Image (cartoon, rainbow, N blue to C red; front, side, top):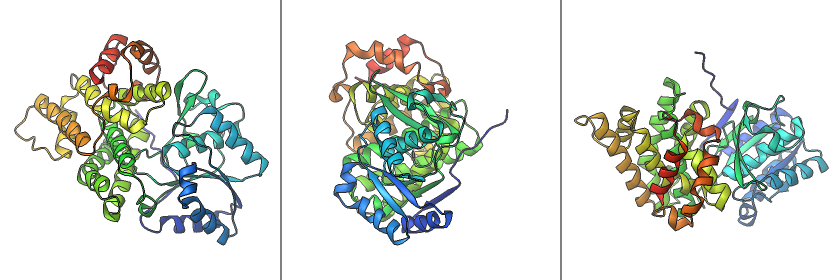
Length: 382
């Protein structure tokens, strides 16, 4: 069966990547940017650094800084209004997954019309989005280079999964110098998000040799650099390696898709407004324990990539070792103990499970679950 591989046309990584990318933007002839970001990045001066660089290259810009941590349909509407008012010819997303996803929603509706709700699902749009340059400031979501766009529907209290080739950015930028000021908690959460991307892509039914190679290398880099990035945020080397790790994980899941960890985490985020990476970290070992019933050999590979000596282990033993390695890394970077610590309630689990089974991310999980099984996984994580 033929496979398609999606990735932005150009991807700039490493120190001084932002300066290099703005030169590329000028060459492409864009004149007026809508910068989609959040207020904390404005407050620390990061947005001003980018607008100044744009201005010095004769590129005008207007800033939409109203993106929430879990971007909403309302955020998309507000950003789109500002884009139209200023006749912007392209969009720049600056930040982590939330600004990137919001910017994708704005850029997609700008050319396709209607509401972002109209594009929930797989490849619903018919036209390419307005050109999008995604400048990343966290090492985790990989939204700067994927075709995934997650937007919270405020009316239904769910996260919509929009998986659409037309939301793929034109240009992605990963400059580790933009990541140095990120707090330890955010570094940990986004790093565990990247680990989840890699593992879910590796066990996905849509995995192929290309995504496998990306996923395994990403796991190795995360295991080798996440703790250092959390404990010593000013380490440019650890930040740089984590940027590469999350990008590789993005290459993997952008093409092999994900599984029940994300399908379930989306519901927690939409229902309780919880941090996505933390939800992923807490669900990851429990979902993989379920998947170990059908792909223990794949999880044994994960254990090996996380530094476990597995040569003398059976597949089942290797899978168990992978679960322990995941839990140990979560503890090392101080992820909360369980979902109860986040305020998740047992009485909400049936509703969460209902919505998780509708999430497109679950369709490529290696074992399809019943409603009762999803409820049990949620319960195990409480």
